[in-house]
Amino acid sequence: MSAGAVQADTHGERLFRKLVESSQDAILIKTLDGEITFWNTAAQRLYGYAPEEALGRHIGMLVPPGLKDEEAELLERVGRGERIEHYETQRTACDGRVLDVDVTLWPIRADDGSVAGACSVARDITDRKRAEAELAGLIAQQRHIALALHLMGTSEPVPGVPAASRYLPSLLGQGVGGDWLDVIDLGAGRVGVFVGDVMGRGLDAAVVMGQMRSAARALALAGLEPGELMRSLDVFTHTLPEQFVTCVYLEADLGVGEVTACSAGHLPVLLVGPDATVAPLPVPISVPLGVAGTAHRQVRLPLPAGSTLVLYTDGLVETAASDLDEQLALLSATLGASFAAGADLETAADRVLEALLPDSTTCADDVTLLLIGFPAGPLDTAETELAAEPRSVPAGREFVGRHLDRWRLSAQADTALLLASELLTNAVHHARGPLTLRVRRGARELGVEVTGHGTPRPRPRPTDPHEECGRGLLLVETLAARWGVRPHPSGRTVWCTLRTE
Image (cartoon, rainbow, N blue to C red; front, side):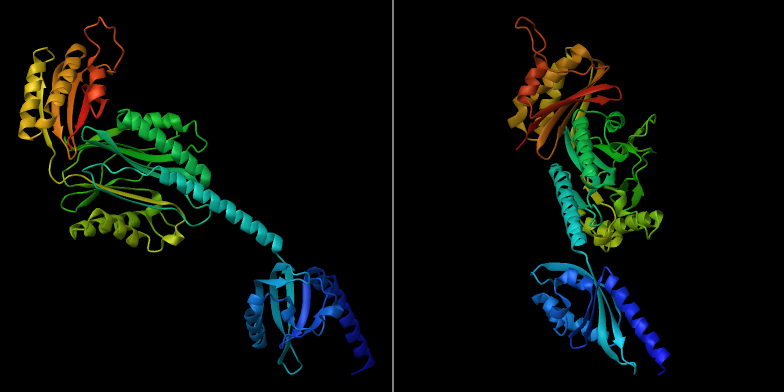
C-alpha cells in the first residue's frame, strides 16, 4: 500500500472517530464473546464508566441479572449476520440505576467477510418509558372509573320478563365509551327498554352516559310516552358537553301485547318472532339527540306473545373490515338459527358475539347487546267499559271481585276492591267517559288501572279535615305497592299494583 493510501486511511479513521465521539448516542463495539473493545464519550455519559474502566471488560457489567440470557441471544443473532433495529431493553449504570434503552446492533465483518464483532448504538429512553407508564396509568384509571359508572347502572331483572345482556368495553385506546342499556319495570305489566350510545370515549363519554341514563330512567318512571320522553332527552342533551347521542326507547305493554317505540338515530331494533323469524321493528329513525329542530316520531306496534326484542349499539356491527349491511344480515341469521334450535336468551347472546366478534380484544368501540323476551302465553287480564257515573263504582268493584275469585286471589281482595273504588271514584269526578277498568294478574303482582278521557294528571294532595274529597289518591299511595299515572291516546290512565306473594 502506498504512503498516500496509508495517510488517507489514517485521516478517514480520525474523521470517523471524531464523528463517533461527537454522537449523542452511546456507541460501543464488542467481540462476539462480549468483550468491549470501543467506548465513546456518550457511552461514558450514559453508563458512568470511563473508557479505561470499560475497555477489556465483559458487556455483562451493563446487563441486569435477569437479562443475561437475552444479551447472549443478541450476540448470537449478530454472529449470524443479523442486524437488530431499535430493540428496547434495560441496562445498568455504574451507580446501580437501571436504564431503559433503545439499542441497535449490527455485525462488524473481518476482511474475509466473517463476523468479527458487534457495534451497538444505545439511546436512553427512561424518561419516555416513565411518561408512557404514567399515561397508561391515567388511562387505566379512567377506564376503571368509566367502567364503574357502567356497572353502577346495572338493571334489575323484571319479574316474568327474561333478559340477557352483554357489555364489552373496548380494550383499545381510552377504552370504555358511552354505551348504556336499561330495562325498567314501569308497573302495571309494562316494561321500558333503553339502549343508547354517547359519541366519544373515555371518562367524559362515560360521565355523559351516566347522566343520560339517569335522566332517561327518571322520565320513563314519570310515565312519559316514548316520543315525549325523547323530546325531553333532546332538550337535556343540549346542556351536556357531548351533544351527539343515539338512543332508542321502547315501552312494552304485556297485557295488551303491543310496544310503543321511538328512535333517535339508533340502529334498527330486531324482532325475533315465536317462529324464529327475524325482522327489523318498523320504527321511524330520526336524527340523533342534540340535533335541534327535529321531531322524534313514536309508533305503536303489535308485540306477539313469545317474541324477543334485540337491541344493540354500533360496536357490534360496525367494523373497519366489514360492510354494515353484511354484519346486520349476519346478526339476523345468527339470531334466527339460535332460536330455531331452541336456544335460550343467554346462549343466543353468546352465539351472536362469537359470530360477529370472534376476537373481542380488537374491538375499537364498546359493544352492547340486549335480548329481552316476552311471555309465550298471554297474561291474565280482563277489562270492562263503564260510564263516568257514580253507579259505575260498585259495578267496577263487582267486576274486580269476580276475577279475583277466578284467579284465587281472595287474600288481596279487600285491599284491591278498596283501591279499585278509589281509582274509579277519582275518574268519575275528574274524567269524561267512557271509563275503561282493567285488572291484570302478573307473576308477582296484581294490577288495577282506570283510563278516562281528558283526565288531568291526578296527584295526591293534603286535604282540609272538613273536605269530603281529595283523600282517595293519598289512600292509594298508602295501600298500593306502586301506583302511577301515564298518558293514553284518549286521556290518562291511573294504575296501582299489589304484591301477590
